[in-house]
Length: 275
Image (cartoon, rainbow, N blue to C red; front, top):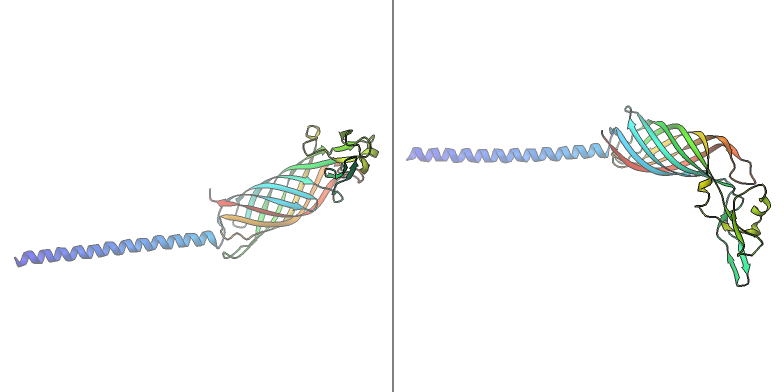
C-alpha cells in the first residue's frame, strides 16, 4: 500500500513539474515574440532605411508654374537610389494675371468672366526621366530627417494649346460675341480690353494643340521627415532647366523663348517595401 502511495506521489510531482516547465516555456516564447515585434517596430520606425522599392506621388510649385508627378524608385546601394518619374506641368508667364472687365448695359452693370489679358497659348508639358538620389545623412532615429542630393534628366513633350477669348464686336454689346485665338490680323481686337467679355474656357483649343519636344534636367536636395522607414513624407527644393525644339509664345507682347529656367519646391508622399 505504501508503495502505491509513493508511486502516485511521484507521478503527481512529475506532472506538476512538467506543467510548470510547460508554462515557463510558453511564457518565454511569448516574451520572445514580444521582443521580436519590438525589434521589428524599431527597425521600421528608426535607424537606417533598408527597403529596396518605393512609390510616391506629389505636387510641385515652380517659379513659372506648377506640376504633379508619380515616382518609382529602387535602391541600388546603401547610399544610392535610382528612380523614374512621370510629370504633368504647365508653364505660366511671370507677367500674366487674371482680370475681369465691367460691362454696362441697359439693365445695369456686371463683371465679365475672368481671363488672362494678352495670353496667346497655354503651354503644358508631359515629362519622363530618370535620376539618382545620393544619401547625405540618414535620419538616425524616429525624429530625424533623411537628407539626399538629387540629380535627374529626361525628355519633355511640350503641348501648345491656343488661348481663346470671348470677344464682342462693339464695346458693351454682349449679344454679338465670338470666341477667337490670337492672330496678327486680329491683334488690335484681341488686345482691346473694351471688347473682351472673358476667357473662352479650358475646354477650347484641345483639337488645335501643337507638339514641341524638348529636354529637361534638375538638381536639388530632398528632406524626408517620415517617422517610419516604410513611409515617404518628403520635401524637395532645387533648380530645373528645360529646352524645346521650337520657340514657345505664351504672351502676345513678350518675346517667345525655347529655354526655361526655374526654382521649385515639391511635396511627395508614398510607401517603401522589399521586393
